[in-house]
Image (cartoon, rainbow, N blue to C red; front, side):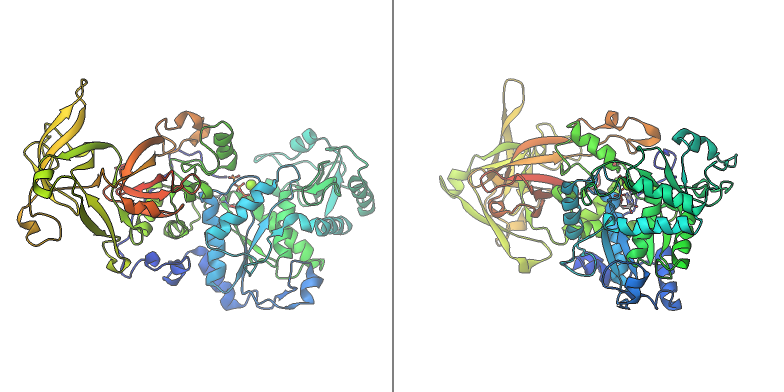
Length: 620
Ligand code: ATP
Ligand code: MG
């Protein structure tokens, strides 16, 4: 079982390794990560072994999912391996799913295989079309295409109901399944527990013919919901409780989004899932550790159905890896849904949410998420990854490409009192700066400086604390890309709050002009001219939860919500940002990385979200 609630488990923080070679993301494009040498892991070793041994070399592929006969009539499978990502369409994907997506699609890509996107929609009650669409968009956005082509539709498990029914009848006829009419309670009691073997059901000894008749009555709607179930006939004394005749079909009158009212019996997940894998010719079925105990049943079922000739051999095999647990968030669709429906956040794509749509709106890129999943790797033991590891990956990937801009988030006006005398009344002087300090080829941005500029309130102190090198009366600093100025005084309102800072321009010190560095200063501050600064809304996001493990040990995670996870400010930014497009990322110099909001940002009303600060300010 998952150790998600275990507060004792270790929290792992991984920082940027010192690269011997340029980092994988240093070039653009989502395939960049694949070009770097991948650290091995147990799944890669298994696949490499299977490829070397030719375990799956003889497989045939019928061009679409199907039974043994369908594939036998096809061609040698062009895919060396097949993996799959099988979400249940009952919610939005989160960062944990991203790990599984990057893993499954990444392995297929790296080993000449194909990864399938399959909607696991065997449970009739829960699925919704909204989720199907957002899941497809999220997988595509992460940089992957499924089922071997850019236009292929995803697979749907419910398309396999006919085969599943046939497989169930086969098991009955072969004496491997029976209809049990005990009550749910009796079945539970007779299953035993870890210390106590189970007790055979009185219905276990029925003949295949009796079972078949009963099962067909179930299918034909002749019995009430819950009146009986079909169970695999394995071993009621097995030390693995999952092998004590697990239920494989139940009666459930519910309209299914794909098959409508065709069925009133539905397969159980543990029965359906291995069959879905086999019909799709999956070779390596990778799932999270909580399914480890199900593996013997997976293998049992695959053996029965291949020996019966229904499914092609060799059947898929299941491998388990540790799910991703990330600090300061919750990664359970149910809990994320609660945050949305209780209006604790503004929707599934709220930039504080660890959903893929939320991360995207926060400014995360596919490259950052791929880098993250690669950096954390795959293991077989549960652990917690510190949220700062994810943030570090974003910072790293944005640093190499995000255009720079100046922004003042908590503005106070600075007046250059000698401007008119030195520069001439009403004059605006031109300044410029590189779009990216390491990529001069990207060009420059330009802006004005005038008598009045906005500076950040924290860059001025009337009485400076020790080590403060920015503005205080008598001190000189440089306005970045502009001139050196000397602070003279400030004015304040009745409450003592600074309303204006005063300074004088030091002549002949403009950045880039000859002799401009003759005057040495210790502080450089960012600013935006009152004359050409743009007024924008900035949403300053912080962690959604105050506790590292908000839902550990069954705690009420709602109580751990950070009341200050969003602060909205009106800021001034340099005019180059007038052309910012929704979703475009920038580094606001000295502040951090910001993204033009993917939903609300317009040219008329610009909105920027804080993606991540320049430095890790948490947990140190
Ligand atoms: P949730 O608990 O949030 O509802 P789930 O596992 O029920 O998640 P599915 O839609 O069934 O969600 O998951 C699709 C795939 O994503 C599964 O193969 C599952 O193993 C994988 N997955 C889900 N959560 C994580 C996680 N935290 N880390 C890694 N893989 C995950
Ligand atoms: Mg699930």
